[in-house]
Length: 632
Image (tube, rainbow, N blue to C red; front, top):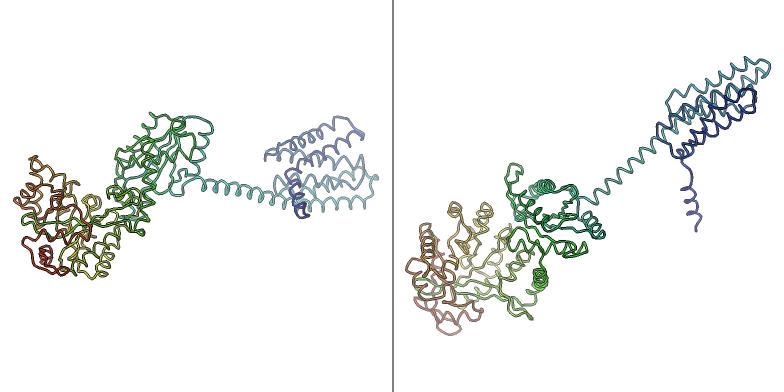
């Protein structure tokens, strides 16, 4: 061991002033008792000094509160002054200053009045010498009195410094304790909501698992919180999270833990919780969020999805239980049930989706994503007017994967933005090829609600059109009806920018999202796409026929065109033409085609078409779509 480390260990072993302080009464009491025993006088005079000894021993054993120190100070002061009187008679010596030192030290604990103890002790000594004239020479007595007074004042000064140092040390200790508590709190609590954080939840969850007691873990994710952040800003989002945390904490018991894991995720740990209690708390948590939140004079409505996992039924490890609650939460979000208990079958499906998402991220660079095109024709004349771009995934192992499987994964993970950019670029590139070949077909591209939250979407579209040398009239963007209702003001602003760019806009799956006509009339859309759920059985269901006719008439009154999706038989197509539907698409017309098959398909649909030259052959293709947008 090095010399430096040995010195450090010795320093660590040094006693503190607080530990040494009780020794003084013990020494002082022993001295006084000894004087009384060997001196001439009654034995009872040693009693007070025995009390001083007892008080000192009590201090050594731990009686060191402020009140205990004050008692020792007062008793030691009386004992020291008594000795200054007794010793000149019994044992004349120069050691009287010792008693003065002890007295001053004691009174320092009381206050600045201790400055008078030194001179007081000197005067007491002179008084005793005067009473015992001849025993002590006058010059010696004066010298001793001066020494006693000087040493008393010096000791008082040192005592004041000690007292200040002791107070500073105590203040430093308390500040260190407070800082330590603050650090511990910061490490175990969320800064925004002050709720326990993931670390503290993990500690309590691990403790419950180690104790082997039953427990329920609820994982909750706010539905629509990202839209609040994107629309109103993070200041509103933070204020909303603070209020959410307060409401959640108000519905659980003191022994139960509400924690914020990060973002808009919260967790609730229920010690000794069973399935009944977990379902009860899940319902209360969701009920607590039903009343809209008032954030800076803005009313915000929000809901939540809750996943439930139980220990030891589902897992006996804290990390595993949290993972299973997360699986259940995403199942609740996907199913729309509000709250769901963990199911092993769902987890296997979730694990498969996670693998699929990881593979999807590399599918673009590996060339596994392909874009196919489904024709759109005139419902009345049957001529072709454009193509809808539809992405497919040709997985090397799983085979062809349809978009209803991987698009939701892309939307939840944020991969939808590069995926849409890929489809947009591929569709416009193919449109350029068609135009160079003399085919004046428009192309439509579907946009996700996540895409419509991009402030730079109009610029992205403008850049893609410029890259392929196309005018905006060749592109149609399809917007989901749900986005229009979720954030109508943002939708109107964004769609206006795209419309001013010259892009054709349509509402996809119209009729399924309960659109408000008051918002519809203010949006710069030109086409309503009637959802196939109304088209498929319209000939057999009078209600569907009325709905389709009503949408067509509504669109016509507003100067909008209509597209019927899911047309699968000739009779339906004929009926749509009769009631005024503008366009139609579906398996009757064509299934989605690979890009290279579009030209061949156009050869079969040349009614009411213009003659163009395609690869040295004469092809008749109608240009009605471009005629429509050109007159806008």
